[in-house]
Structures are given as C-alpha cells and as structure tokens.
Image 1 (cartoon, rainbow, N blue to C red):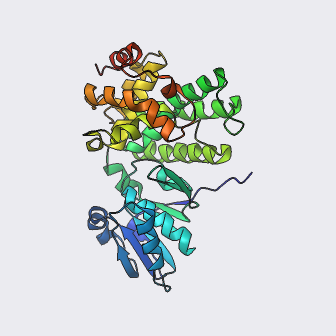
Image 2 (cartoon, rainbow, N blue to C red):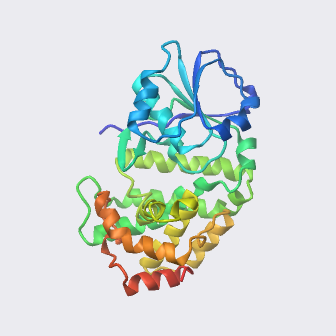
Length: 328
C-alpha cells in the first residue's frame, strides 16, 4: 500500500518569507493584488490561469522556464491550484502553496479533480500559513470539509449495511471511529472558526490534516465525503447553482443528507451557521432539482454507494428531506 504524504506546513507571517530560488508564480488576479505587497519572490514567469483543463495545464508545463527552481501557488483559486499541482508534478519541481483563505481541504490533497477525472499529482512540498491573515478572511469555509465527515460516515455505514461496499472501500470500524472523533472536535470549534479566532483556526488546520491523511491511508474518501459532496458538485451543474459558494453547497448537502438518513438536522444546522456558513442559502427549487438529478449524477461519476443512489426523483422522500432541512 502506498500512503501518500501531506505537505510540510510552515506557520509564518508572509513578510518573513525569504525565497532565493528563481520562481514560477501561478495565482489569480484577486489573490496577487492582495498579497503581492507582502511577498518578495524572485519571479521568472507568472501565470493567472482561467481555463481548468488538462490541455491548458500541459501548455503551462511545457512552457515553464527551465531556470525555475520552484513553483509558487499564491491564493486559493481552485483553477490556479489545479494548474499549480499539475505543472509541479509534470515539471518535477517543488510546489509551495501560500493560501490567502481556507475555502476547502484541496491544498492538502495529493491529487486534483479535473472535470470528473481524479489525477494524482502528489502533495505540495510546503504550505505557508499566515494565521493573522487567514483569520481575517471569515467565514473559514474549509471547516465544511471536516463537518462533512458526519454525513459521510452515515453513507459509509449505509453502504456497509446494504452490502454495497467494495474490497477497496470495506467499512472499517476503527477508521470510522477516528473520523468521528475528528468531526466531534470540529463541532466544538465551529463557533470559534466562525469568529476567526486564531486558536480555532490552527485547530481546524490540524483537523484538516488528520482528515486528508486518513483519506490517504485508506486510499478513498468514504470516511470524509459522501452524498453531501455529490450534492454540492451536482448543484453546481444546475442553472444558478454555480452562483453559490462551494461551502454553502456542501453545507446544504450536509443538512439534506442528514435529513435523508432521517436524523435530527438541528444540531448540524446550528454548528454550520455558527461557523459562518449558510446551509439553507440554496433556494428550494434548486435543492429539489439537484436531489432529483443526484442518482444519475452519482452513477455518471461512479461514486461510492450511498443514500444518493437510492433516491427516487420527485419522491416523497425528497420532499420530506427538504422539509426536515428547512428548505421546503
């Protein structure tokens, strides 16, 4: 079994960063405008990718100057992050990530998800975290990728009960217990994260690392991602769905997945809202259309079995879930 590592983490003020290697920078216009005055980098070339495709990333890799000794990803733009991971892997150069906000856990993962295809890239060499900077950018939406453990475990257990796991995704009680403890701590710090408290932020980073490392160890994400993330991905494909943030789509998916499993959604809603997220932001019509499309979406993306695959479009179960989640 090949267990992939996490990036090295360095907690430091960006103004203290001293980089002497010639650098290729990948960023977004918004991120670079806000951080360029805090960073001193010996730049050889700079790219602000807007096309999220393998062909474009190949172009960037092929045109990377040979003199570049490191690649920096500045900011948290998902397209820029995908590009940086891909280019670094293709060029065999170290990748240093400097996020300006924590929107999800992808800066820790050893792969990219590109138009439905998962491409292994290896993790970044280093992530530089300026806690004072990150604490200012609330909500710290990445907490949604830890709270989603709660509903992911519901799905994983559901698959186990229905004999629908595979040899690769078989249910492991010890792993489920570890994941549940991570989620339990996330519930405890949710309010602090919502307020941007530095201690809660550093605790969240710890929990994100544990979550991603558990996924790496298991070789799948059944302990951390289930129907709630499928819902978020499917909602983005609906008219008007992409207008809502990743975090709000996942938060809504968490409420709805909990409701589909016939659980009390009130505690989860309280935790999500205290973290600064908006679990009921999606209009009922959008949430309903997404749920109706979810079984076909799960099949098309070959998702691990969960309650999404059991949904019947336009069913009473969907209407009941919307009502339980406060979205009807």
